[in-house]
Length: 488
Image (cartoon, rainbow, N blue to C red; front, side, top):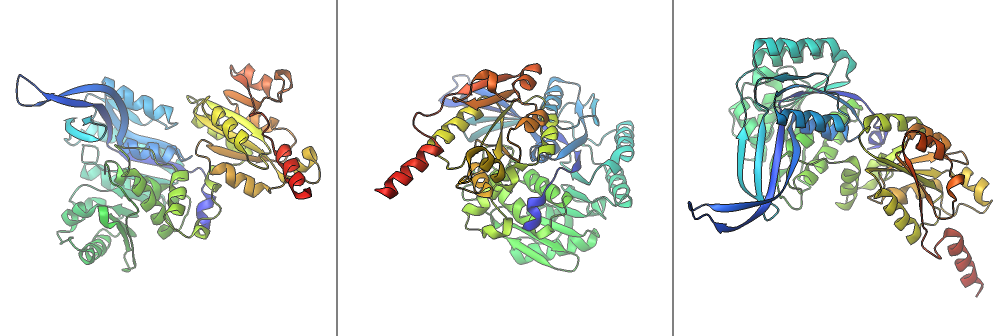
């Protein structure tokens, strides 16, 4: 998967039904004296995005530029959705407030994962003509700004027949691919899209064909692809994995990568999000399918809708006995260029970015504890790493012991390190200027006044932290110990 390491930030528009998922976690220990029903004692409550909003946030959290076109209610839950989208760096300029209630799903989970009951609030009637026209005008005015369009149809009102057709036709005229997560059984509604993504049940409804066996799923997928004049149909089949077919009958079936299934909520959103990220970046479609399959496997192993990051997917790919040569060097997905740091800052205005730097030559327990403590000071940890040439100027001709690619790969394997930036200069000043961290961290061998970038951070209201090193643990000490033991 050589192309996959070249993933860059693309502009992706998500159109569809947005929802708010509310999770109450608690315990059930008794039956109500009022009626023979369990008493649920709520202990905590969390909000998560659902539907098209979940698709959007999964794309945005993987360093893509995302906008969402939809509507929300003029209610508290609508405000919550808009706030979460905004905090994830998603453009909500095309999110319209209406008198319809915000689609909400409230779940009660006992014992951590057992769903006791789900309470839904929604108006799934087709949207009014005035709302349709307002959304469509936003679409035609801005569609050329995007590299790819995803439609997330949950049959909650936004995708009436005419609106769907106009979106697909307009995008195709502009040469922009449209991927659709489908729910409606009217197949002609989705005609001419680039790719359709039904699940097994939806495939049966769309085609009227049997879909019990893998052979039947393949035949029905090919039939749907031809009927809708699509380039591809990707059918997800739960425990049986997924199949991708094209109009010529070429097909690829992948088995599921999930070892444990706790909750299938949001798995389809994850698949369409990953296909969108990859295809917007011109990744070959069968390679994109592999990554989407691993992402879905991770999603169903978690409770509720969750954000699945590229780093997790690549790690899972390796763990499941995959050929690592197919995806390039591990950790490439955490690597940023210096000029990408500005976009990272822009996309995370409401999140606390922590920055530190170093050579990290012979990685030891002191490094790990130091980086872990640094990560705990904020939401995102960015680590600047001196290039080999920079290390030689600072440490002498015998250094580094480990070359820069190996040092980067070791650091990328740490789950608490979010991003890595290689720099050639002797100081990380350019990185700090671009990153504008909220917290600048250095080791205990630094005095506060000697910290490079201190003024930049403090000027924007940030702070500088000096963390203590683990006594007696250093790369220089390790080298001396190795030399001493060899001489003995």
